[in-house]
Each structure stands twice: as structure tokens, then as C-alpha cells.
Length: 326
Length: 228
Image (cartoon, rainbow over all chains, first blue to last red; front, side):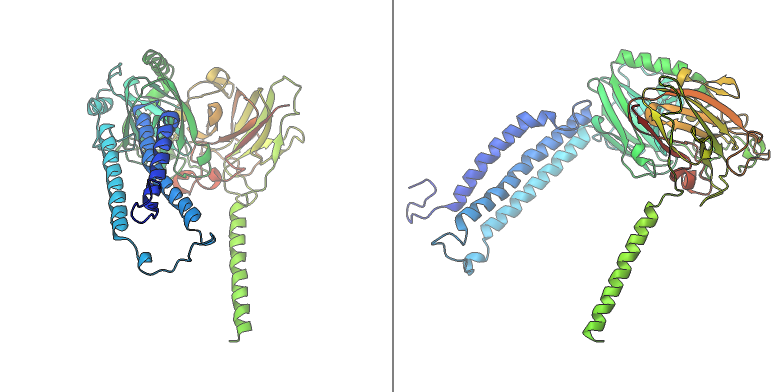
């Protein structure tokens, strides 16, 4: 007599047998995934938000796999055990046994509800503790890391220089079809290259000069929509040097597919050298740029028009300076 | 209506529906202007720089959209101007570009494009004068840019005075008001590299980036870089 047989009737306890198979396979699969696959899951560990994303994905997988395995085990067991083609097994006849099982139904509802609520709590906790988990929080972020508000204010008012230990404010300007980046902590220069220092809190301020784009720095675990005349703030903490890809993830026109570039996280000293060098090299063009602001108001009519800070007045008369556009 | 009549009606309506779908897809996929590929791989001796001569014109003057701005390029074999924006170039080669800019200018929406980037020497020659940054809020502004984002190349094409009588039909004669911009860049490995204008010059379209800015063979195309 096996452990799954009822000692009184000699009938097999199928539920116990299924549960045993399910638990064994689930534990093995979860452990294998957590220790062998988990550390290599996307998006990697370049930043705090990337690590957080990886943890979230791993937790979700560890919870989801037993659910998936339960379905497979139940299906496989049912096919093997209760197949109508097996000799001696009666055809299903319905009746009371087919009307459902209240305990199973209640158990299913309770278990799935608890699972979903736990995941919701886990997700909310990650959102709070990781300052928005790299997602755009809009112009007034709820989850703000220490020093971010002061850095954001200084970038706009005093143009305070960045130094290690401070929050680095980086403005992401999307336009059809390229991202450019401004560094207010280094005189407000603008460049096509995104370079970040390690072990630093980054405050991305994402905006657009035309249509809606989306700044997606995949390996950084950062994704924020770029909306015209709106500042969308996202935070992350860089952890180690490495390369990352930036893509637009909002269909934005013909060259949307070509709207990508590559960024680097480098040591703090290498970053300071690069930023200071670029600030000097771009000084002439920086003086021609619009003053740093968190949003700009471009001329929507097309070719004519630079971008201007909120409330700015167009500082030229195109018909006088440039003649009529042909 | 008889069963046969009903079946016929359903069949006809079905075929009409299929026809409309096919027509819509075909219309959507049809390029704005039929274009080809201009081959520069045999235009020079091996190892020598490739010379590309292009024009930017305020209105192409022919085709489906005669009022649209457009690039033109000189075919190195036929020595005729063609409206192709797909150029076949050799890999790992120096490209010497000359662009005759016939369109008027304006301030750049983003002055970042006023800085010459990715070219040899990080500069360009504007009518023979070396320029590394062009302030689009002065002078005659910038009409267009020539940019290859994946190569980091960006060159502002300084506009001509819009009050002058400008060329209104391509190809334009160099007797018409224009700026000559020359610069060099180097191709990398074989592949397809998109290039485009970053000035929203599609007048009349949302943010200026529709029309010629969103249609092949006008203000953007591809460098088909091949191993020779």
C-alpha cells in the first residue's frame, strides 16, 4: 500500500499525489532558476533600478513557475490517469462529482488572491524604496532620493557644479529623431553622448521638442516618456561601469527605428574629465543654446524657430533676419 | 432574395472588402517618389576618397510633390542629378562631401545641430571658410542639416537669404544663390546607415517633421555601406 492510498478503502488519493509531484518539481525548478538563471536575467545590475528590475523579474518567475507547473502536472496527471481510452476506466458520467468542489474553489480563490495581493505589496514597496524604480514620475516626483530636490533647484537657479556625492541632473531632450543630453552641472552644455559616473544618483529630466517619445535606457532600468512641454523625472543610482543602449520606445515617425544611441557609465574621475572637457569644447555652442530650463516651447510651425524656456519670447523676427521661407 | 442571390451578395461584398484592404496597404507602402540607389563604389580608385556631390533645394519642382524640399545627388557615372537618397559607399573609406545649399534658413529648433560633429577635424568649409560652430540665430540661419546619427555626423547647412530670388526647381544651377558646404567623414563596416535632415523643414506638417521629412528620397535616406 502506498502513502497515497486510503488505508480504509484502498483508493488512491489523487490530490495528495498531484500535490507531492507539484511541490517537488516546483521547489527544484525555483531553486535552479533563482541560483542559476536569476543572476543573469535582464536588465542586469548596472544601476539600482536595473538590479531592482532583475529582482522583480526573478520574484515574479519564482511565484509564477509553481502556478505554471501545477497546471502542467494536473494536466499530465489527468491525461495519464483518467484517460477515457484506458481499459477499465469508466466514461465520465457527470452527476454530483462533476458539480464542483467548494473546498477547491475557495482554496483557488484564496490562494490566487493572496498571491496577487502579495505581489502588489512587493511592487509598491519596490516603487517606494527605489525612488520610482526608474520610471518617469512626472514633474513633481513622489519618491525622491536625498539631495535630488536641491540638485534640481540648483540646476535651474545657480547652475551649481556637480561633484562626487551630489545628485547629477541630466536633461534628456527628445526630438524627431534623436536624443540629446544637457548637463546643467557643467555649464549646461548639450551633447549627443550620454555619459554617467558610477556610484551616483542620477536625476533624468526628460522632455521633448516635438511629439511624444520615450526615453528607454534598457540596461539602466530607466524608462520615461518624453512629452513636449512637460518635465518627466526618473531616478537611478549607478552601481558599476558599463555600456548601455538608449532607445525611443514610443512610435514617433518614420525614423523611430533609428532613434537610438549608446551610453556609458564610467568612473567618477573619468566622468569629471569627460564632462569638463566637453564643457570646454562645446563652450561656443553652449552660449548659443537657449538657457537651461526643464521644458522648452518650440515653434510648432516647422523650420522656423528655436526652442525657448517657458514663457520666453521669440528673440528674433524671422521675416526680418532671414526673409520669407520659400 | 434567393439563397443564391444572398450568397452572391456576400461574396461580392467580401471581395470588395478584400480589395479595399489590399488597396489601402498598397497605397501605404508605395514610396513617395520612385527612387533607386546611387552607386559610388566604382567612382574612384581603390583607397582613394569618394566624392559625393549633393544639393538641397527649397522645392523640388517636379514629381508627386513639386513644392517639397529635397536632396538631390549627382550620379558619379552619368553625371546627372537624381533624386536618390540611398547611396552605396565603400566600407572604411573617407567620403568627401560637397553640398550645395539652395534653400533659405532660420534658427534651429535645437541649436545643438549648429555644432559640426563627427566630421574629419570636427569642422566644415562654408564657402571656403572653416567653421566648427554656426550660430543659427545670426546671419542667414540654417536651412537643413546632413546627419548620420550612427556615425555621429551632424553638419548644419547654412541657408541663403530668403529675400533673394531662390531656385525653385531642381536641379539648381550654381548661378542661383547658394552656399557651398564641404566636409569629410569616414564610413565604418558594411551595413545600412540612415541619414537625415534634423531641421523640421516639412512646412505645413505637424512640427515640420511630416511630408518630405517623413518620405524616402526627400530629406533622408540610407548609406548602404559595402565591402568592395
